[in-house]
Length: 511
Image (cartoon, rainbow, N blue to C red; front, top):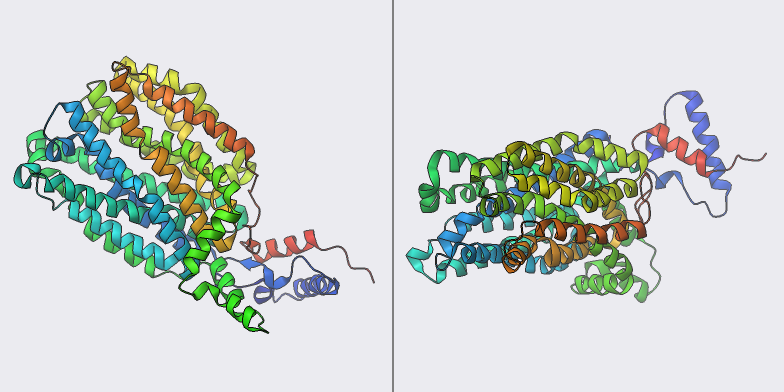
């Protein structure tokens, strides 16, 4: 069954069902300006959707495995590449290099996003996969500061820039890819698997670092062990690339491309307009169109993503360092607690996806944002206690708030923008927010704590500020659950749903 097939191609052979379809379709045809025609409904093939979700999610997992390694090796990397000064200075230098990758993410989003709207989602996602794998592999090959001096941190920054540039096209493309494949009523459920991939990537990175720290010890890790997780990136990148190139383009993009290519032409102006998406100036045109026409939604997207990413990076990236450097936990204990937290989140993530399909994106997003605002201080007070049980309880509170955002954002964000500029708009808005707020979270929190005499509650206050912005942003957004993506036809999972949709939007024929 083709993933982009229409209702007309899947009419039941049963005579009664066939008669019912014909009556309904004739009723539509009699209307002067029908809002919904039978050729406008996409009936998805569940097997194809699952393959698309698997490829996008696993590719995303490999991207974030590469990116997560640096977070969990921040202390060791600080000693290897920035050995001068105090431990705090080395850690700040390491987190500054971590943040550098986020400075170029908006550039990556501005390049890959419009490119994905022009040549297709699949090709661009394959390209970002290659770049991320190469950047991560090269970091594992850089000689230490002791070996080549100044060039060591310089090369580290260079390859972090490559990672950041490629990641600029990843989330916007992967979430767009899944959203455009999924049926309208299950977009939250299928979208939640994208964040499942993110957590799998982070979990894999944390697990490998934990094993290496346990079996090699700090001396061997500082000498050569830190390189091993980075070197794994090459083979993993090839696996992700294979998964992505085996898929077809999304049904929504195929329809958009067909409408641009086969639209009626009657003049030179119309012909130029018809093939404008193929011209060399198309990316610039897309960028200007995005900023000119989508700026209110871009601002909303930046606010949502900024709040979401501060809480995300605070818990999944910064927390191991907070436990180790601030609370003097053993590094392996901090990683072990985080691993347990992420595994629990993965177990309930798809349930959150189903809930936001049923009850709406806004209620789940609001629950997560308000949860962070209310529980941040109690959670960090528990973590501050220091006992294993208290730390686990505090992490659990934060994790339950985060999972409401994780399981919902990947369905909510693509629905903010129309199909013809979705990849570009989401990539630009998402990466601007991540660059300004998300990726700088470890650096900002570390600097603030240093400025305020090691006040261990700084992360809680920072989280509360982000959550308050998120509450306002969620209140301003429109509900998009169980609705078609803007600029795309309705997408249903079965022929029965197609018939119900037609019946709901077609008045009873009068004879």
